[in-house]
Image 1: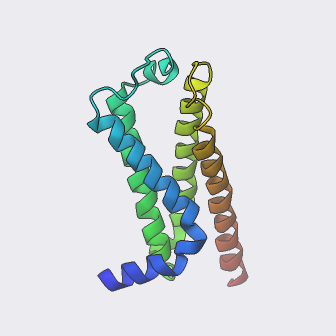
Image 2: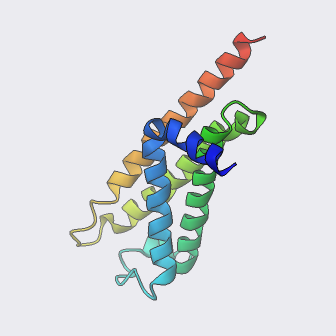
Image 3: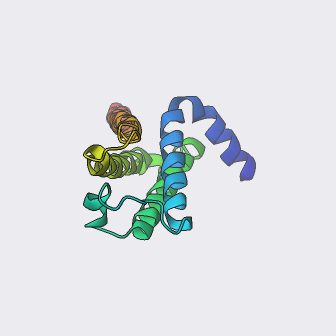
Length: 150
């Protein structure tokens, strides 16, 4: 089973690299929010996100979303020829959409802050949006191949 997982991921890794990167960044950023006593040292810059959840809870949301995304990518690559993978492009798309929503909130939160780091959050946002379109394209391909088999 371990070899199948590693082989399956390796076979699709180059195609899904931006999604793996997105999941990893989300897990890393969320982990830092959870493990660092105060990551958001300027609460005014993060007021939008802090009005919804605490910093620690945002970290947990990010870690959970990133792990779900990585799990969907693993299933998608490892079990591509089985019933398990039927809905993995949908799950990948939803995880990328959740990631885009998180990065959009981060971008909007720090946009008004007088900080040199305010522009960086547009990059994971753009990558997540691209991943949403990539996953939904895979949903369409899977649907058309199922329809052709009928």
